[in-house]
Image 1 (cartoon, one colour):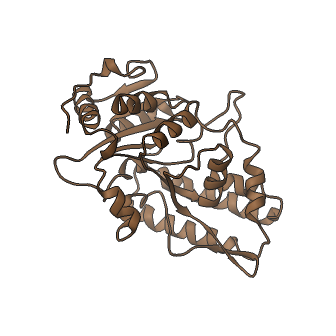
Image 2 (cartoon, rainbow, N blue to C red):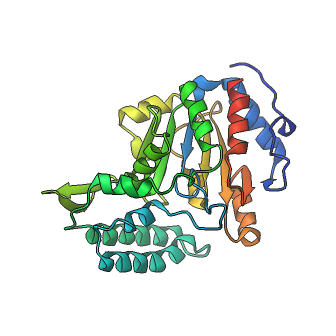
Length: 299
């Protein structure tokens, strides 16, 4: 490992009005360790909805989530859409409730996943239909996200995308953005088919907001590959995303830099985000800061 010193002032944007850092010395230490380790020890672990994608477009329109994209598919009846929205209205407040015990939240997330799985049965939906809807949203990724992915591909750095949403939509959107590159792996909930019709989700991989971490890959070839890369940049927009690097690396030579995108209720949520993430980017619809950090590591 090469000894490198990185200061906050070396990374454009870390001193900007949309950036907050609770402990600058800790962040400088992690940046220096990541830069010293270089690309061979680096991996990226990221959420998808509102992390790789924007929260809103320039015209103020909200970007669809991966499940929201599914709801736009004309093959799905209106009854599905209404029931899906009703489930979101019930369970999202539970997911984000800062006072509820985590074990109770996990029970609720499993119930939500199970009910959603049961809704998605008996419809003749094709992957081509999902991809056709994805093509409507060419400006949905954060500004600079494509450049970041291209840079990481050229440097042979793995990108692991954990999504508690719908993996089929995530892959369709990445494909549409020309970001579904060989170094990108999506771990999410994928649709299952039976006799040409939807049959819920693949029940072997239930991913919800509180189990999105690399322990879900243990025993697999992907885990063995990523386990050797013990410098991680984690990116997410929810407090649960801060734990996405858990279960992957350990030891004093392992370093995880956590970047949080705070999109909503900024004043109320900022203290909790500062506790969970090393760097908090507030109402920032770009990948400028992560790209500058990667530039420093790959220099």
